Amino acid sequence: MIANNFTTQFLEFIAARKLMIARSAPEGRALSYAERPRENEYRWEPACGRAVLHSFTWTNRPAESGKPGRYNIAWVELEEGPRLISTVETDETQVVRIGMPLNSHFREDGKLVFVPAQPQEIT
Amino acid sequence: MPRPLSTIVGLGHSKRSREPIGSARTLAADAVRAAIADSGIQTQDIDGLLLNQSSLAPVGTLPLQLMDDIGLKDLNLLSLVESKGASVLQMLQTASFAIAQGAASAVACVFADAPVGGSTTGAAAFNNEAPMTGIEGWEKQYGVQGPVMSYALAAQRYLHDYNLDTCALGHYAIACREWARLNPVASFPDPLTLQSYLESRVIAEPLRLLDCAYPVNGGIAIIVTRPELGPDLRQPPVFVHGIAQAHVTVERLAAKTASISAGQLAAARLYEQVGIAPGNVSQCQFYDAFSICALLALEDHGFCRRGEASEMIASGATGPQGHLPLNTGGGHLADAYLQGMTPLAEAITQARGVAGARQRNADAVLVNGSGGRLEFHAAALLSPHMVLR
Image (cartoon, rainbow over the protein chains, first blue to last red):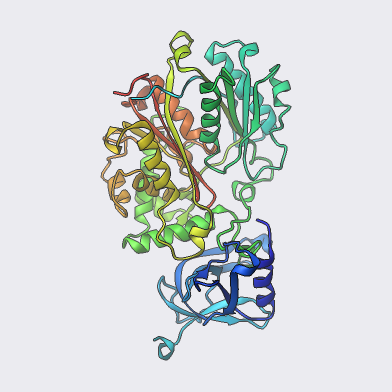
């Protein structure tokens, strides 16, 4: 897969701790991150940060990785439509399940993760 | 009914092992020589060679110079074909089209791989990047390595959508063992119980070790020629009645869409091309790198409705006593993973009528190939009959 301006711009936003989505111009359709629009055919805007969990898997890091342990891979659907691979960070009381509402969150190290939405945040 | 596109008249296997037995190149040459000998065609009459190496193997693993290794001269057709798990059927299609156009008359198609052995495990050999989002390198930071995790995500969603538990996948692994018991060269001929399946190691939830293909070192080759030549050669001819491809790009995974799957598209195109319906298919040989692939393929090809494949398999419908035999050699899970050649070789064996204890009606054998994150597909229909019954 070749990085182009579209993906480079997205990654630059991520590096600046901004989750953005692209909309086609002039229709305003939310573009998936796999699309390759021409430079003048889309515009970026901040994502609302709300998402639902489309799917997930739990797996284990191998011992030789130096950081063995269980972790989840999350297939997240942003409220605007595009999907991203990420992870869901939970505390010990929270169960990861398909359809759960999530919010985007940038960790201290700059990594984009998702956290379960609190009940009062769910509309 | 249109005439067949081509005929498969040779099938050859190299040695096969989990231990090192030579390079993929050596195994490919061995397989092609075996296929030529099987066909009864003279080596000097082979005028086409198509190669498919594993997409995870280094570039040049199967070089064009393989023609020299085999002793082929003055070829009319020579190419490397690559479309993940659909590649083998693409080779068959390319060979068939070249033959139909008179551009070649006898084409060897080969796949070979040597991923395991020594210090390399199957998991290490298939630990490639698995793009789903469409952003280069994105998945790796979240620990997505190898196809198993992306198929696990698809399987988890499938189980959720149809309110199924992991036993739904286990039924398929069990059925593969039932067929493998009838295959003298299968890697896992011992029966499998649901309990044993559920006790096997989870690789990426919900996929367990026994949901995954069993990689081996080896090669398989076929010889393709004109339909009218088939009956005069050494082996019973296997006619290729149709081949269709469908590829939908990873965009389908990267956003909520209403588009149908590549598997459905390839199936619809094949049925239209050949002029048949699912009810005319005698048996299926599907590319089942993971158990979920077989369930989705049954649904994509119209043998049951969405979410019903597991119930169909659990009923025995696709097993040795069933009306729609599926992966009669044990498939990738219980026979061996030589990518698209595993289902195609079993289809040829069945269509020749030489499958021994596992032989079933093979009047119309459906073969598929799928790869990537299921965005690349091909399907073909084979038969021992020049005119489909």
